[in-house]
Amino acid sequence: MASSDQNQPRSQAVCCETRRTQRRDERKLKRRSSWRPTLNLTSMIDVVFLLLVYFMVATEFKRTEVIERLDLPNRLGAGVADPFEVPDHPVVITVSSQDTDAGRSTVAAGFTIGIQGPFPQPTTTTSLTELLEARRMGGTGGRGLWPEDHPIVLQPAPGTDWEHVVRTFDATARAGYNNISLNSNEG
Amino acid sequence: MIDVVFLLIVFFILVSQVVNREAEPLDLPEVPDAAAKIAGEESRLVVNVLSDAEQPGVGLRAVVQGQPFAIDPEGCQALAKRVAVDLESRPDLAIHLRADREVHFEWIQPIMDTLRAASAHVEGAEAKVHLVLLEPAS
Image 1 (tube, rainbow over the protein chains, first blue to last red):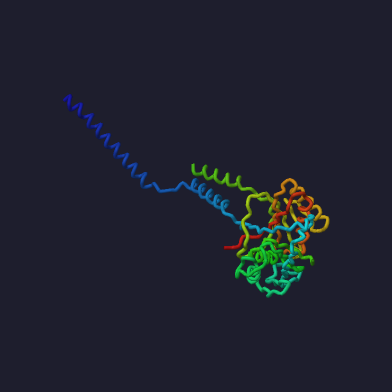
Image 2: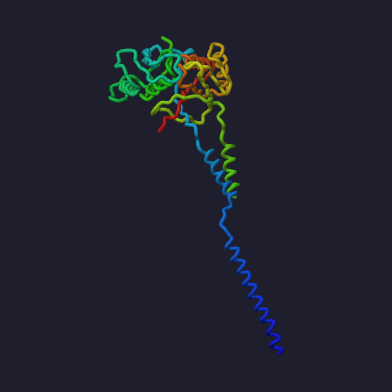
């Protein structure tokens, strides 16, 4: 009897235990059926915006600027002339925009280049570069006589756009000369 | 953690970006396949030549570090003084000429003459003038 008395509450306890676990499982099942996957949006938006800002800041929208050397000869300074130096006659290159109308609002489409003297007249910047390169000492062909620092004067006509002046200057500099000056004044 | 790291990165990028106050917004000339190079870190003075939006081809004014100078004899004199002051303190100064592509050359000539006069005025200085243009599109 005593053992059965002892057994009964034990079996009751086991019974209760199993019921409890059953209920727990049921609850779990219920919870699981109502559970839906959700993303934590707040932190994701945080990170995405940060990435966006980071790339916007890191991207360079401006195109880089480059420079061309133009060493203005210091003509106003009192230089001592070398009496034995043969005076160099500068090569004068004229530039003029095709359309010198003051009323237009954009850069003119084309420009003309000319060289004063008995030279074949260049039509494009490339032909100007080739012509000057062929006449430079150590240039193409090897028959040039002008040293690298042969004076070259660019004479833009009135109404010439700055862009065209710079393009001609670039063509001259690419031929290998380093004594180029910009001067619109005659003489 | 990632939040904080990115914030720090962005913060430092913003802080380290030195705003170039010397460069005025203007249309630089563009030369295809130019024999130009990227400016080094040497000391420089930028002279901007802005064009007049209402009168195309006319150079409106020259701007040096936000300070405008008219392109006329008085303005050029003031500009020469301004450049000479900088040349005296730094004789190896490079002068960058940033001119609008539309400006006609007769407006740039007085500025070049001014720069030459300013460098002749300062003892031992030689004006190293550089033309600024856009990097050719690759």
